[in-house]
Image (tube, rainbow, N blue to C red):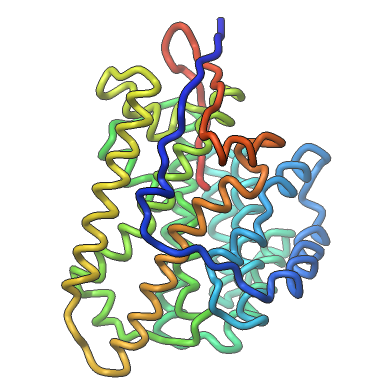
Amino acid sequence: MSQYQTITIPDLMAMTPFTMVKNVHLEEVDADSREWTDSFGFFDEEQRRDYIDANVELCMAYFYPLCGREELRTGCDIGNLVFVYDLVCDVKDGASARKTGDNFMNALSGKPFEHTNIGIMTRQFRDRYVKTAGPNTTARFIKTCDEYVTAIANEAGLREHGKVLDLDSYISLRRDCCSTNVCVGLFEYVNNIDLPNEVFDDPVFNRIYWAGIDLAWIANDIYSYKREASSGLDATNIVTVFMHQYKLPLQEAMDSCAEYYKSVLDKMLADIATLRSFSEKVDKDIALYIETMKHLVVGNLHWSYDSTRYFGAEHEEIKRTRVVKIKVKEEGHGAQGFSRG
């Protein structure tokens, strides 16, 4: 039996001292990327509504606000490709998801691949990406995508068994399953930079990198909880993990997740302030990379309210008040599912 509880969503925007900027080229590329995605025929009627609600192109315009038209188009394409990939794998078991992931990676890496729709879509994205991507960022991007599809396959196996993870295990899986991870992998491409490997080997830079990704998925879990709970898909969400692990009621769990978000943000800001110098040119490129990470973090917050992905027709009112009614269960949280925003 279900009932409804009114809660206040934590004010993550007030905690986040970054400025939201939207790419000026959005209206020039959004329709083209959407039509490209539609051309593969992935969506039934309900899935297409979900796709329109997500407004992936707006999200990418917030993530990559400083880049040119061509780079934004490629950014929109990767956002749409990941959306479709998640959709395809959501209905697969672990073994089938691994097979799809292998084909995805073959197409992305330029190897022979099976000409499924997802394979063809991936190869077409690759053809656009490799025109200007540098060798270091290309190698890193392919590695990031490989880790992502492996995590998606592992998550599919968890979904089969309806398993709820402890917090540390959930964080580890959520990092790799988060589609934002792939979007961050495009930072160098959209900014026309190619950082040396020593930057990513630096422990402080590495912490900044993962903090940005963590901030994105923590926020997405908080914002998506209402949607997932109403569909019985809230078992693998950090809010549910806090409720289970720390025996908290819903509002306290939400607030605790926000405190965790703030702690990650504070550590990120401290690391940005203490990041060492590499060289004049590399430092300039790193500054642009970190600026883009800041835009992604705050842009993700605005997209969550500005699209209808999480809050439907009430999204503007909920952005103003942060008050929502959430469907809760009287006993346990035995739902299955996963949010990878």
